[in-house]
Length: 574
Figure (tube, one colour):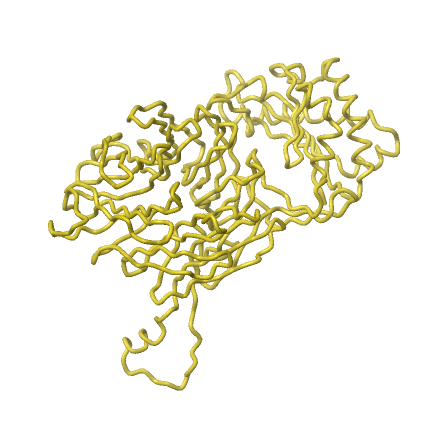
């Protein structure tokens, strides 16, 4: 799994002043996390979650004879509290606040107000729901604790077109038909939905459900003002994923029990629902297979309860998407987690409009890292919130990350012009002609079909040699002119996954050897094209590497074997 080196500092150049990975880790005592994130009107980023606030012992000489007296002395306004972190475009923390309300609480969602303030949604540790409105400086304008007399939990808070918000969650049943919020069912849990005006007044609160366990997961507003809700129902023998459409006043229009699982079938858990630009809807779900390994499932449906697409995305490691958003070009990005036996990483996945995976990236260290939420920014970059755990630590920390449109990590630069822009300008003709592409992590991919290798081949064709000679001269001069910045030029060989009539071990080793030969062929061509002065310098930074078939090119979940037989270049900066 990919390891991300956090806060990796790069050199200063004439066109690129200090640059770093856009990654912010906020360390707090004991566990802390960020569950939601949004872009502010001034282009800064704000995330919310919880941290732990602790009271210093102001009177150490006082003795307590009763444990309950001691607990009472330390409980007021301390413990788990809603926490807000705001960072600027230089990845610097410019605001950090904990709510310090009178009851322990956690924030699960943040939405913007037109005045650049926030609605924060969460719940208290003793089972009440909480909505707070903050100004632009995160000062609490008011907070409302609401819910039933039983145990409630909020899972989502969504912004509505009238400036108000909709709180979605679940409530332990009142067991009383006289409860004026009761609609159907008296199960262990019911779906609990409350609508607030933009001024924070409760317009209505209603419960929905069956005689079994029902949990509200998420909701979204349709173009006509109706509300689409995704929820779950669980009994001893059956589990269901349910889509429900409500009027703006909370009256049910239709209910679709989309997935029915008996107790011996594979479990399906919904996580997020969004409205697309074509006014259809997408739900992310975690699907468990026969061996209880989770993978990603996406369902697209319309306002009239018609399923438009239902796609499963199988990944090498168990994976799940916890949030998803749509770009203006119809592509989507989802974030969540990917895990093996000993390690969990944050997952960023790029999807096309047909819900097929285009690319995935893993971020984190050797411990537990996870992405809970994302927000697509004005410039098509993506802000991500979650948890990062340091090496040799048992405590989770707040984590804010900024990604590029292609899911690579964004860089922070103090000047608009940077190395990536200069590299794109250098190869503008080749990019326009479809001969190569450049990613923001400075990977150069050859995209002309004539530049891919044939099965088992590693020697360059005359066409490959001519093209490499052209770009090598330009690239060599460019890198040499900026040699104080450049640390390494990697020449990475790749193969497709096949090799006839051999077992996995030999298939990997043979492809590893082949990919190294491809890397060397390209490295030799680039090196011999340079003059003696550049060769002497390049000898210190050139690195050939082989990936075998570990990074095959996938399209619609299927390996593109022709495009996988390739060599890529990557520039690493100091």
